[in-house]
Image (cartoon, rainbow, N blue to C red; front, side, top):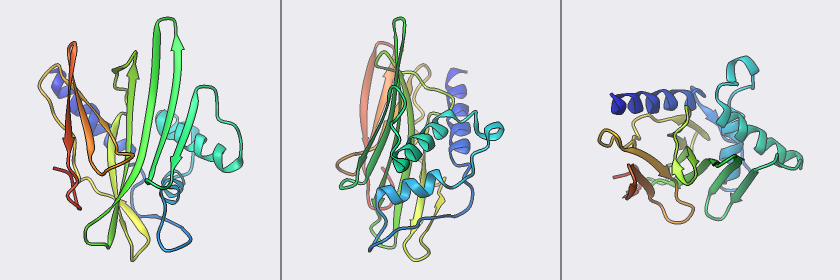
Length: 206
């Protein structure tokens, strides 16, 4: 039952994270888009509506942090936004403490150049932790968008599926690469954890 519930959570999360249905245009200057161009396009892909979007707190938090950066406004308490243009990686982190609980919301974005040289793959990953242990929230999950160099647009690609479905009682979290090309999966067993690497082959992960 627990395994089924976790699967449902991941499916629902993916659907919410991919709510930017249809093509997303990526505007850029120069020869090709940077990670900042991809993130700007992603966070601008839908208009903010408090009644519609307030439930997706993770996405809204990234939007606010990104807009603060563009406006030169300081980030909120506990928020850090790291942009690594060279490695094509962005991470938003929000840390908070309450009594004995230390919480971390980590949202990563990066992209890969595909082997056909015609496409790029953009990823958006949400993971929540409490006291150093994985503590999945409603919107935890990872989604991918494929960018077409010719059209300068990207679209959600559900067929790129890296979700690992572990045994009952085991949860899995994901980490995007800041360096290198592979995704790291951590399996959280009761009292222990195990790490697996998903290898990038130029089109998908194995």
